[in-house]
Amino acid sequence: MLDELEVLNPATEEVVATVPGATAEDVDAAVVRATHAGRAWAAAAPADRARLLRRFAATVDEHIEELARLEVREAGHTIGNARWEAGNVRDLLDYAAGGVERLNGRQIPVPGGLDITLLEPLGVVGVIAPWNFPMPIAAWGTAPALAAGNAVILKPAETTPLTALRLAELALAAGLPEGLFQVLPGRGDVAGDALVRHPGVAKIVFTGSTRVGKRIMSLCADRVKRVTLELGGKSPNIVFADADVEAAALSAPMSFLDNSGQDCCARTRILVQSSVYDRFLELLGPAVRSVVVGDPADEKTQMGPLISKTQLERVRAYVPDDAPGIRGTAPTGPGFWFPPTVLTGLAADAPAAVEEVFGPVAVVVPFDDEADAVRLANATDYGLSGSIWTRDVGRALRVSGAVAAGNLSVNSHSSVRYWTPFGGYKQSGLGRELGPDALTAFTETKNVFISTESTEA
Ligand code: NAD
Image (cartoon, rainbow, N blue to C red; front, side, top):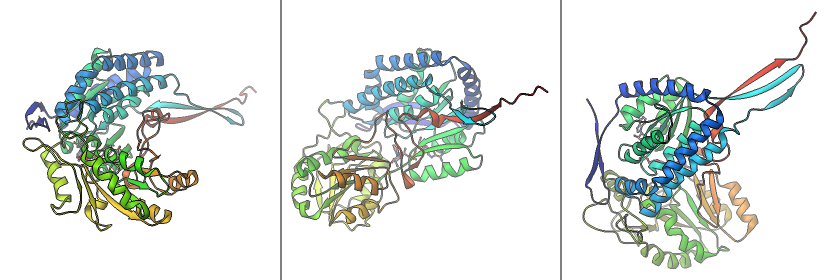
């Protein structure tokens, strides 16, 4: 039976499109096409591959506004964010293109000959993307995989297939060969599962929930299939008394409200040193209440709706009506709206304090000293991101060393740049994406020794 994916506008609940979902047979056929296209691509001159990827980047650049408007409609992202996200795809392609001719092996000194390493493409790479950042996360895997000489099959999330499908059209328009970059919208347990199990797929790059990531990892183990996992987070925002407390408080709202909190790096555990706790909350209240929540297509909007009814119900379940804290406002009526929310006075092990809510909800927790802050920051199975606010350079470095997370920022909330590495500790993930080594994650290293011993008698 053919699955139909209904794409809803999360701000209005209107149907934007209906897209046929791929079946396991569709995945089989896509892998055949990808294998064929990938072989020719891997054999092409590096400069030609780089040129085509730059052309793809330029074509995306010409369609930024169209892609952004589509993302506003299918995902409810604010127009400002959506433009950035489309631009990020262009930048990822340009950056990866710059790596094609620089994907060098090594020459290692050994006695009796010459030892060289070759970085060979893997073949067909499956990229399984979530709905929270459909375009950037699709491109995190796709751009370096293509640049390293692989073919890519991308399975977008059920709720957000439209920008991915448009990117596949733009790739063809830019001149990428048929079959090299294919997008197969479909259900996770159908198309996603078929991609993970397929013997012709050499690597899976998965971004999504820790639950599904664990399942994918165990299925990949069966064939020792390569896998990169970017999973959930419950990131701390640690504010020491010696910090610029005003800057920390005023920047805190958008560190967990951006993308309506549907961000794996959202700083949803705000840990504040006891001596500045009250002052911090006094500043945080008005800052949270002033966040503009509404129509994502309006240039002034800072926060849009949640992605779906399911997500809205999930978020609601974490926030009891009488929970003490700070509440912003959100539209009523159609759409999946939830107001900015900060919970105070929760037990340290309350579900909202330890689980990934994936909505506009943070908790504020006081701490006594540096050791207490590190203990609280690490009291989670996740380890993706975090922020540290202090004016003491030594403390910034000590705490950066002690917090078990892959992406930390001091006196800021930045996490993701396409040219710096990104990934999680503990159950937040496996492997790294982005940054200068992104292409090598899509290669096998082959070591070749050539003897220089004379064979003459
Ligand atoms: P999800 O795990 O439900 O789905 C992610 C993708 O996996 C979707 O394309 C889905 O169709 C597919 N999928 C689902 N079941 C599958 C299966 N059995 N086999 C193969 N594929 C399957 O996650 P979600 O709800 O779409 O995304 C939200 C999650 O993603 C959050 O937990 C968030 O933290 C995480 N995330 C992590 C990062 C990161 O870089 N670490 C970035 C963004 C989002």
